[in-house]
Image 1 (cartoon, rainbow, N blue to C red):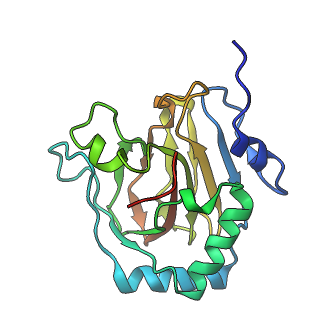
Image 2 (image 1 turned 180 degrees about the horizontal axis):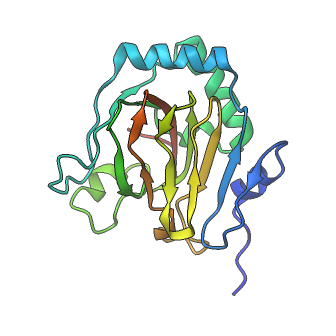
Image 3 (image 1 turned 135 degrees about the horizontal axis):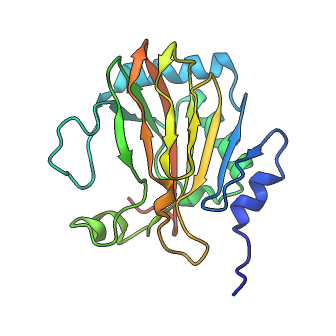
Amino acid sequence: MNLPPDPTALHLAGQAGVQRAPFPALDLFTLRGFLDGPLCAALIDLIERDHRPSTLADANGDAAFRTSSTCELAPAEAAVRTLVERLGAVSGIDPRHAEPLQGQRYEEGQEFKAHTDYFEPQGADYERFCGRSGQRTWTFMIYLNTVPAGGATRFKAVGKTVQPEVGKLLAWNNRLPGGGCNEATMHHALKVRKGRKYVITQWYRERPWAG
């Protein structure tokens, strides 16, 4: 059965400068220069102000699985408002489906081992995380700085490694065409070898965000 293309993938493919990775296993897009240097710097300042140790939705017993720090970005901040507007334009997704924006900070030696962004349907906390707003659909991630060494995002299933650059957008669809979870989206935030890495992550849901 031929299923219709994902509307977000179609929208992204029509945006100036967006590059689509040639992998039938998943919808994966990049856009260099999505954000300019001053806006990235303002967002980094917000992350520095509020970051705390990152956590896992379903703990797996590996204390070193995710070693970054995280913060939610206040919607009232001017830099956040600008980013939200730009994400809405590039994604074409109803902003009501967006989770609160998160910023992540990686020190040297820190990483997020291979994982998926969707919640495992058989996971112990699936209903708590997905009962109201549904499963995660798309991930939009923006690198805020160019890391001197390390810190790339590796999609092992398709052999794709994306290097962090100031203002680069990376977006992927967490679902299969039929609506199930796409295991090919498993990705590894590789260890930072030198310097720090700052990223913003915007996740979207099946239904409007309800906390």
